[in-house]
Length: 484
Image (cartoon, one colour):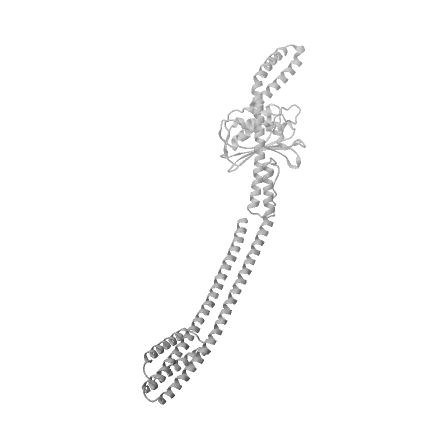
């Protein structure tokens, strides 16, 4: 969504820029057309003025021929007439596309008067040269009248062309002014739209980016419990996804940190247990041997039995510590739902033989996973024994599907200890029972984790009873070499 918004904003700005460029090119084209019209009109005026001068030159050569009454200027006259006709043709070509009736009428009058001047001179003046001057008066007046008409026609045409030039120049200036105003308006509009987009973007994303930056800073300072606000009813875009991913990262880091602390704790316990196991086990063995010997004395039998129980308890604690810190290597084999059910049935037989209540068994679905059955038996034995000791009924549910096997051990006893975080149940030496060592659940979780799963404790319905659940996933990575 964020990319779509930025793309739309970019397209809007690009569209406005392209529209402004197209409008500028169009206005420039119009202004160029007006300028070309002005230049063409100025050219028409220049040609018309040159035509007027050429006609006067023709008249001058006619006048010299009449005054001198000889043929000395005939060649000059022929050149002048040729220039006049060429200029007339040029002016006709320039005004050929002009639909103005007045201009076309002026051209027609100019052609007629030029023809009159030339015909009068060639047909009436030239034949009479060298004779009586009286014969030259009438042709001279005819040519002079035609020249006057040509002069007036050229003046009128020039005046009209100048008016058109001024009009074309005014239109060009108006088009240029309109272009400038339009470009300024478009520039202001583009600035306004761009500012609006920036403002809306800053308003929409600024606080969220600040929240992400603040969250990243909190995470960097070790506050992994902080969470970036990602409301479900807010915009679901890249920033929201990034916030959720950062929250997930913080949660994962919290879990990994807890696992590292736990691993370090177990490693410390393991080093301590390994260093004192030999020293403690030897005195315990001696104490146990003397207690067995004293047990034969009837007067000391009760005291000896107490010494034996407490000594065996100390030995079990040391054994549990060693097992927790250095669990045996897993011996994996294919295990299905039925095999785990048989495992639970075997534990039930042991419970019944020991006078404990038998746990219920629920089996459903099929699946095959890689697991160590003896280790799973140790986990199930611990969980079922804890449930039975609560005085409630225990039920073991084994459910298989295409992705794994879920095992749940639940009871309807008093439930989890009130006010205690369920995760604390798996800490070494934590126990809610007065005679408990607090190692059974810790060892069970270590075994489950080595199978690539997680042992979770929750309360039963209505807070009654407890549930312990883990899921063996098909194809899960299994740590067969022990916890590091």
